Image (tube, rainbow, N blue to C red; front, side, top):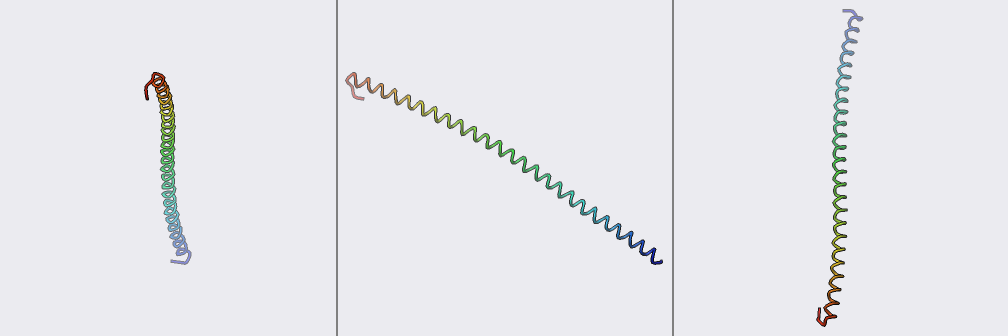
Amino acid sequence: MDATTLGGALLALVGTLAGAVVAYLGKRGETALSGYSHLTGDLQEERDRLERRVRDLETRAADQAAHAAEVAAHRAADQAELARLRAIIVSLGGTP
């Protein structure tokens, strides 16, 4: 075997090894990119779910505030009615 044949065989071996290394690193990069895409998708789903939950909680808080205002209005009306009835009782000579 002469030097040229040996050099050619060595060059072919180095080329094959380099191709294998590039393929290995490319597959690792593809796997990493796929994992990153999956993680991004999961985070977006979680964000959307939490945004829906915040909207639901805001709606419930608004409903509860409206209900509290309604109860306060009823209480004020009841207090006014009690005052009116007490005045009638006193005008008729009774004690409330």
